[in-house]
Structure formats: structure tokens, C-alpha cells
Length: 279
Image (cartoon, rainbow, N blue to C red; front, side, top):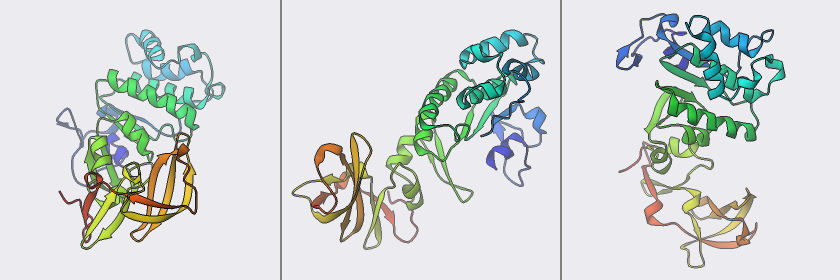
């Protein structure tokens, strides 16, 4: 919805849309110079990639050269003679981004463009977006439900919950110091551990929870998930279930009795009534 409002496909009932400090909210979509790349690459299947790009580049005086330059930048130059059906999902999405760039946009909107790709390919194409961010002069708005994707490609993130921006800022800050319990619960590969302490809700990321013989919080391991070099263990304690990230080789297994240490420096405090972070 937000991207459609920026692109002019939906009329905003309030607020403003500005690019380079200038309002575009009253301009029709064709005059906004905003390009959108959706989850579906939307390439015309009966045309080659080159002809798909030509449909956009024909308005350029140097359209042919622009196609070659953009195709090289997105590494699809050797695929231009192919039709979309003969390209992989990642290749089609890169061609879609190339098409968007050839429209000479002032802003680029990416709506979960890699949601349908397998993890290996998604990681590679994500690198393309990082490279694009360094070369494209205008702003890029990238929508994703994958927090790792957002942290890896963005200069700034906005966490939207039920249509409202709940938190925004530099990605690492939002991860380390979320502005509310709601953000702490959804932003991160594993949610922040949360438990009540009087009128305060305390939170700590799994990677800061230490398993130590002299830990102050005893508990029993009720689940373990190994992810390669690391493992996540869920420990049932008097404060509730707490997840800790440990080295996979540490030997802790389900049913083991362990003690946890929660470093004070890693604890985040939230108001138990409002859920907002306490400075």
C-alpha cells in the first residue's frame, strides 16, 4: 500500500510524498518518475529480454547504448536474446530491475522482489541490490519481511506494524535497541527474549544469554535447534522460556540442567504498560 501510494497508483488521503524535497503527491503516476519492481517480474513472455527493455528505452536518444550499459551492470548482457521462460528467477528479476532503471526514475521501489527465489539465489541477488544502492542516485524503498535482508541492504529501516511505523532508524540500532516490545518480538532471526520484572519488561537477544556454571538463572533445556556452527537452546526457567545462542559444539542437549547469565549491559527495558522502550 505504501509503495502504491508513493508511485501514485493509490491516492493518499492525507500526508505528503516528497522526493528531493519536492512534493509529488498531486502528480499523476506517469509524471512522478517512480519505478516499481514487484514480486512478479511482469516481463512480456513472448518477447526477448532485449525487446522487453527496448519498450522502456525507446524514449531515450541513446536507448541501445543504455540497454547494453544497464544489462552489463546487472549481469544480464548475455541473456538479452532469451525469452523470460528461458531465464532463471534471479535472472528475470535482474532484468526487471534493469527495465525499471531504464525508465530513468527518480526513485526505485522494490516490493519483495526476491520472495519467490530459493535462499542461495536470494543471497546472490541481494548482493546486486547492495551494489545498485551504491550506483543509483535516487532513493530506493525496499519492502521485505526478512529482517536479515533489510539489515543487509538498507541504510535505514522502518518497521511497519498494522499500517503504522513502529520504529525507524539505522538497522543495527533498531536490532540492538528496539523502540517497543512489538518491534523486539518481530525484528530479528530469533525474537528478543522478554520477561516481566515488577512494572518493567526486560528483553535480551539470544546471542547475549550466556550458559555458565555460575549463572544466576537455573533452568532445564526443553528444545535445541542446530543451525550449523551455532545452536539455539530453549531453557525453561522461573522467568519463562529463554532462548540462548550457543556454539553447536558445546554439548548441551534437551533435558540438561543449565544456568544462565543475563549481562546487565545487554538487557533492554520496556514499560510493562505501554510496551515502549525506557531510556
